[in-house]
Image 1: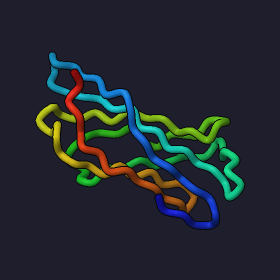
Image 2: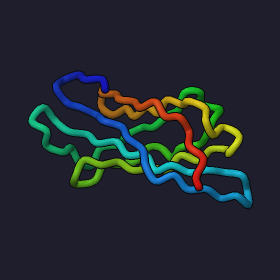
Image 3: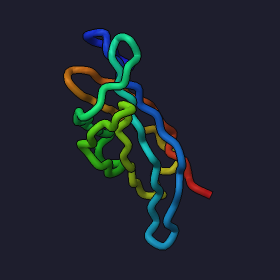
Image 4: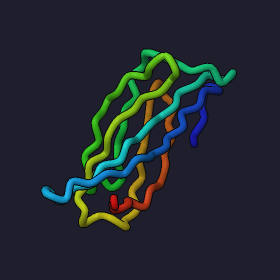
Length: 106
């Protein structure tokens, strides 16, 4: 979690699911954007990116809702299951990231 201007942007992931017919996996990725008083910041674009960028596709940008949440999907090839990827979220000069060991959905 990186902080600037006393605002925060926290990135998390959940809900792995797979599509064995085409060899892909999917994660739901959420960024929570809040001000210095922990109040959600709504109606701002959050830009998501990956490191390394070649390991998947992530929908971006995504606008925060009234709860300060920006939710998107990361799709990656099953061949990358077990690899570590960094998911970045950036908005208004604030950035946050999470390192994920890409799961294989069951």
